[in-house]
Image 1 (cartoon, one colour):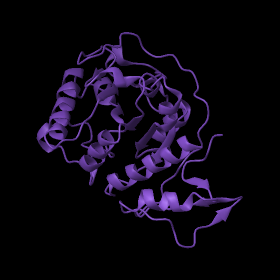
Image 2: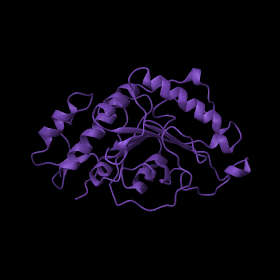
Image 3: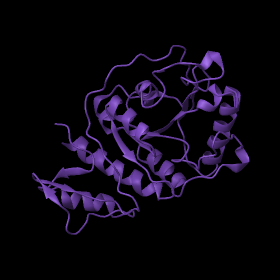
Length: 262
């Protein structure tokens, strides 16, 4: 049975959830509101996280030309750290600007990368628990002529190097350079299936194993991120820039583990 993210059945699960969340800056409210036998928790952060119900994935067409194992595809895909775990490991999808790093507003200066609080800790925790971390990001700067795809690839390489230098792993980067108002004609598309809130980038990277797919989730700072997660049939967690990203990710992992046991 599918469950609403952020809620679990009240009977016999509260203690388990408390145990899973104690290690982080998360807690179950001592007087949580109960409705229909479910308990609703709130994470310890400045802004309440909006959680959305899981539903079967919707099918959208995706672009051709995806290339794996450190090759770069013309549709903006960059795959790193591929392997046999791709089909069986759950995936944590991350938006880029405003979620993993501070938003540079169309700038691609690798010397100005500023990671969100807890980002490295979140990435390290995920890989230690068997999750793959994949960045899925809209990059209309390419379509608008502010930069080229090569600039985006270089920026992502710098992010990957930053993360790996402290033991954090980003398994893959994907970006969508298309936009309906593109100044560069080749990137003009009114509703490209990869551009969030469409789920193309997510669908392309979901594991085939049903349990791993059910445990996959997305973290992003915009409503379009959450909508893309919903369209792909996974849970979406709204992040408030500046909050502890590791705490939110640990909360999401705890939710995924509880759901998998149901």
